[in-house]
Structures are given as C-alpha cells and as structure tokens.
Length: 521
Image 1 (cartoon, rainbow, N blue to C red):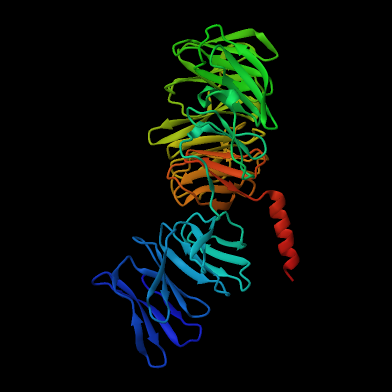
Image 2 (cartoon, rainbow, N blue to C red):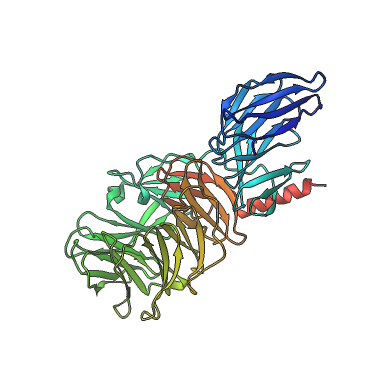
C-alpha cells in the first residue's frame, strides 16, 4: 500500500501521501479545502512508501508510517509540514497509526506482529502488545481508550485492555563484568554477586542500601554453586567443600566435606533436599564422587566409560545425577541407588534438565541447522527417547517448579512448551521475539514464564495458562543468554550485561484491576 489520506479534525485540510513511482520518491501534501490550494508539501525523499497517516485530535500534529526499507514513524507539524520527531521501534512496515481521543498517546500497528503505544508528551515508547502471529494491519481504540481492537493478516481480531502498566522506567543495571554464573538469586529479592577476584557481595534489589561484602567466603572464584534460595557451596582454598546457609545477612556453615586430594573440585553439584554433594577431581578421571552431609564420612564412587565428566545437576528427588564432559560432547546419567548409567549420549550437549519428578531427562540436540528435543524415560532406560523436532538451533531449557512443563527456546525466536511425561509438544509456539529467544525461566508458582533476547525488547513475560504475552521489557544488550527470577517473583533478571526489572505481583495486578473496576461506571 503506497497511499494514505487524512482529514484535519475541523475538516479544513486534507493530508495526502503522494508518490512519484517513476523516481520511487514519496512525500506528504497538505491541501486547503476552502481554496483547493496546496499549503505545503514535504521534501520528496526516497523511501519504501508511506503506508498510513494520523492526525492528532487538536489538529496540531501529523504522524506518518512507512515500511519495508524504513519502518520509522515520523511526526510532523500539521500546520507547516516541518519534521518534529522520528519514532524508532518497529522492525517491519507500519500499517496503521491512531491517536487516542485525548491525544496523549499514539498507537501503531505493524508487520513485526506488534502494537506499540507512544507517549505524545515526550514521544517515548510506553507499551508493546503482542499476540498476532502475522502482520498487524489495523487498530482501533475505544473512546475512553480502555479497549484496543486489532486485526491481523493471520485472520485474528483481538481485544486488548489498555492500561498504563509497563516497565518503561528502565532496569536497574548491575556491574558490567558479571558473567552468566556470577549473579545468583537468593531469598526474597536478594542477589549474590560474584565479582571476579573479589569477595562475593549480597545485594537487596528492593533497597537502596550498598552491597554487603562477604569476606568469610574468600574470593568469588571459590564459589562452586548456589542451590535453592539460600544454600551456597564453596571451596575453602585448601581441602574442604563448605556448605553454607543464608540466614539474615550471614552465611551459616551447615557442613563440610574433606577431599583427600586437597585439590579444588573440577565439577560440582548439590541436592538441597537430600543434602547430597557430587564432585570430580582432576580433568581425566573416570569417576564422580558422592557424599552426604548427613553421613560425611561415607563416599560413593560412580564409574563412567568416558573420562573428564563434570557433574552439573541432580534430579530434584535426588535419585539421578547428570554429568557432562568439559567439551560437552558426552553426557551420562546415573541411578544413584544402583550406580548404573541409565542415559548415555555421545553427541554435543549444551543443556539438559530433569522433569516429571526426576523421571525424565530432557535434552536438546543440534541436528544440522535445526534440532530435536529428546525425552529419556529414566525408569525404563532401555526404551528409546521420544523426539520432537525443531526447525532452528536450540538455546535454553526451563522446567516448571512442579516439573510438569518444560519450555525451550531457539534461534528463531520461538518458545515452545512440552509435556515431559508424554514427550509431546503442547500447542503452538509462543511467538513474540523478532530475534533469537535465549534464556528462559518459570516463575516460582509456574504461572508465568520469561524469555530473554536482546535489542529493544530484551525480555518478554508470558502467562503460561493463556499463552499470552503480558509485558515487554526494554533494556540493553544484543544477546542475553540468561533469564532468572528473584525468589519472591517480584524481580526479573536477564544478562549479561545483567539488569533487573521490578514487575507487579499477581496481588498487585488484582488490586489494580479491582480499583479500575470501581472507577468504571
């Protein structure tokens, strides 16, 4: 579509999108309807076509949308045709623009499957709505601006409840030098930061108090891992693995495991429920060692057929342990009670997770330019895994708190949900990211899911039950590989570079909706 027209609110002026197809140039023309004379015309610029025009209710501002090569929204002085602003955010053709009746917001619909809200007082983006699976070609707003209707090329007509809730105040930035495993959510909204070469720091995201240094842990490089919301395991620098529990502002020692070799473990895993520790010593050993804080003098040795395995995860029930080589080219899973290997993979493994109460191992495996998600039934290790193909390269896995759902992300920007017990895909993918979907995580109650990407829309918040996008969060970074929640679910984290957003709880959302309903006659 290379044309658009708009009447001024007083019906005295007509605004037209004019095209010079021979030279592939476009402009906007303003005509005085009383005299039928041109009042002004914008400079003819090379563009991919003006697709839509919208005039503000007071007739003072004109907005234009274009597409294909340049999806920038341009804002003009309606009286003179002088350019005022350029609004960047859409990544595909802008098909429709509309002002709210009070003129305080401009709404845009585009081929990137999004609907965007712009505050006309400062021309900043305040909200993004997603749900269409194809171009959004039309949008309309109710008189009170409480409802937005949109129509898409996918044939869907959608109604949205518009409000002023958005996370546009910007995230809290954490230190730039923190890597993927150096920001650890603890209890409430507290984080443990592991700055390289320095003692760990405890930070409360809901308070402005400075970080608390923890010199008793020693260097951050001694930290072996964090588990649950309050367990930290670290190397004492000589011959012991120490397990500490966060109580208040202190880490209280709960137990210690002494290593005869006196060397720092090359790999480590911990199961908080059963107080089980697993570690390896050296880089070429075929053994993984287990001990329990309940019986620290008793050790179990799990033998493998490949050297260099590093334990990285227990199943939640403590019955299974997974280990992978440092190169990621082999994975083994043991039944801890029998000491037998119940899953063996000799292919590249970048991620794996236990689900369905620890009975199923979920592994994404690269297949050419795509991948498949495999589901291994650990109670029947002789059975072949169930396989679900994917069209893009895999990125991350997440398991819901109860283990009944698994989410995966891929380079194509899709987030998919699976039933791990059945090894089946549940419904269509969650569409929203324009770039790769990378880190993903379920909230503690399993009702929400976050996925991280990069650019202007670094994090998306999804309702798992309705499969709708609830929120898009802007931040920094082009490739955010990790996404996490604070323990209380009030803060979303993504990085690196690490940043944190405060999000409303379900109780706050319910209270706001109740207050809004009370105001509505």
